[in-house]
Amino acid sequence: MVELPAALCPQARLLVVGTSRMEEVDTDHPLTALRLALRREELITEIELTPLNATEVTALAQDIATNHLTMEQIEQLYADTEGNPLFVVETVRARLSRGAEEGEGIGEVQPLSPLHPSSPHGH
Image 1: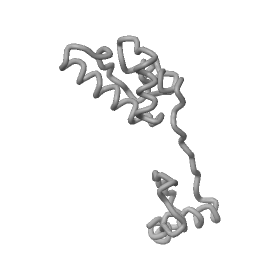
Image 2: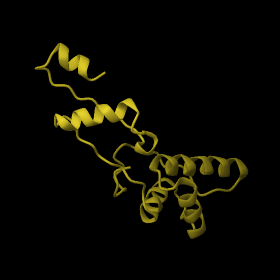
Image 3: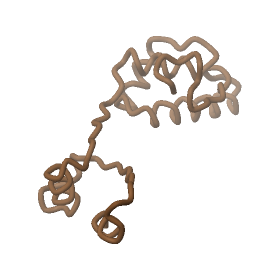
Image 4: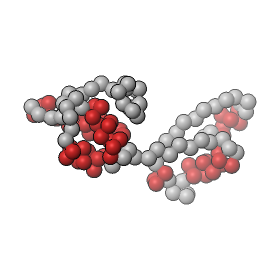
């Protein structure tokens, strides 16, 4: 896949961005061979993203909800999302929405921009 554009125009600059869950890629997967070949040619930069810790989940969740979250809510959110930032955001938003429909909840949804100024994490 990557070899074809590079072979057609070797002097061109090409940036390919991809994601994968490495725990789901075994040694027989085609991505494994591609990663090894790109490493051998020093043509790859890999960035491992780890889950958020409990403090980071708290900061992100508080950034979205306008009301203060209880420790019980934060602990449940961390357990439910396992620190996945997308899951944290969507779980808080879903609970906010559900709470609004039921007349309760954890505040109003704060709109997020790619670089939310009050977030230390840029979420």
